Image 1 (cartoon, rainbow, N blue to C red):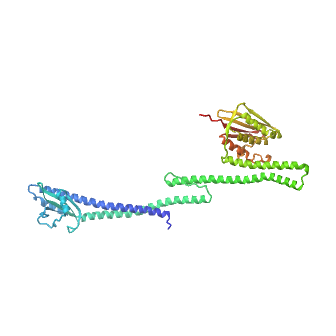
Image 2: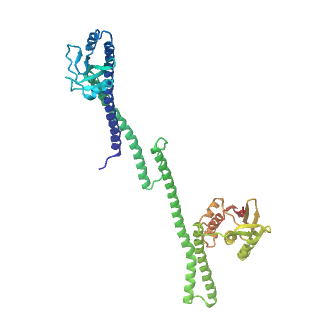
Image 3: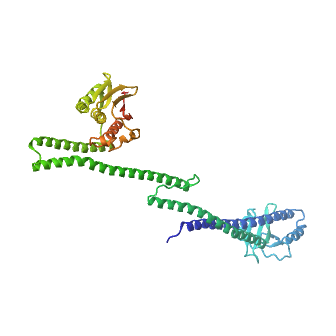
Length: 467
């Protein structure tokens, strides 16, 4: 069975209200009657004490008649009885004989006042009566009993009940209206959240619910907005990754198509004999170069994924800066000479670098190759110097430079600063460089001016001191 939350709220509000009213009404009636009967019993007890004081006079009974007149005017009757329950005063009266139970007699014999709030068995109508012990000397002589009908009390309680019912009848409609208003407010807020949830399920993440610190609904709205914002950012990241994946596939297809086409063409020419004998060695060398190029492309991509997923463990040690830069110079000297470039080292003897030797070579080789690619007949400087907390490595060239709006883009995977002048290599090198520098807890930055050259700066922390 499905019941709307709106009606559940109304039912809960009204149910609580009716239950509370029922409990309060019951307590009010019960304690109202108790208070009314207690007040009547206290009144009878005060008159009984006055009668006892009269009985203690030298000539008892002289002024008792006056009490009879006064009390009858208030619809109160009294008698004086002995231990045998015989009426001693008034002699001529219509008061029924006193028949007290043994337990009630025990109360009087203990010298206490007996109070009965309602009694309908010993009288012709419902009565409230009290019995006070009458003692002569030190002996119990009997008692004084005063009784009054409870009809007036019951009428008063009935009037109170009627007033209570009228108040409830008037307040319930107002309570119902208030319950409807509160239920409408709560349900409206829930419906707003439901609508926002539906929008998110349809892929619309730009949702903003009104927030407040008033109650849990406000907290829920805040958490919902935070969730929507995170989903929006995640969706944007997914779209960016999807775009990168598409670009990756396009780049892979483009980069691999050329060497594969070359290899296939040469192999087919060798197979069919279309390549002359004197050109066969050149064709085989071309196939070998293109195969190595494909292997390099695949290895760079795998290496990048390992570095990005923190699957690389660095073996850090102190390395002499000049030695490291000389290794880079030796490896790339021939490649630089083909472009008419000079590799120049500027490093103080004894200057030390703390890092992984192989990975630092990989970092510098990628950067220097990039400089060689975009520098024709220029100089490429390899520098190392020490600062207070870091060792600074610089690779500066006098090449073509990079546009300002492209500087941050060069770190992206597969990005090439100048495709038209590219050598057909993947744009993975600088992405790998940045990841490896981060693994060394270092920083890398680039400065460039179009037509004047580019400078890469790497800052690596010194070896921690042993304490």
